Picture 1 (tube, chains in turn purple, cyan):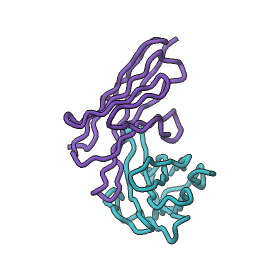
Picture 2 (cartoon, chains in turn green, red):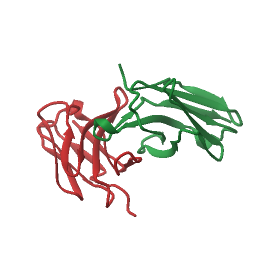
Picture 3 (cartoon, chains in turn brown, purple):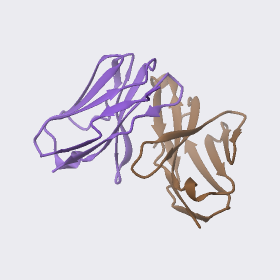
Length: 111
Length: 112
């Protein structure tokens, strides 16, 4: 079983739409959670960390549900520039600080 | 802060040749990770180091791959001999334990 599971998509949404991605993780010892964004032919870059109480950064909202072991990312008012692959990442300290990446969800925002 | 530095950015080599990829982590980060990414297999962890010590190399494909971290500011990933199926983008990343990882720009390797 994979440590992190994501719906690969693709998600094709019109500009201005709201889109949500979910990700589930299997290890209850997971401690830190992140969303990364990867543009075509570029390296993954941190989009935002995910805190237990949920957190917001402009149009982006991340939430964590420890009981159900999933995290989510909500993008409001989608822009063309949001088109990318979004990777869910968990860190499990008792594995020696290893990070586990989901396979990514592809988003295309259409004009 | 210069971020994670990788070299070369692009490498084209012939099958059977030795390839060495280099990485300089962010100063103060004591965890370093090597990943490989392809369209078919996505992002795969090859090996990672904590405080210059290899912790998990179970992702290293086979004996042709080796990685070293002689000091806190430098790591290499070596492929010898290289094969066409090794063609991929190789990323190096660094972090402080439990904090986010920062990726280098990657090395795009093509083995013909």
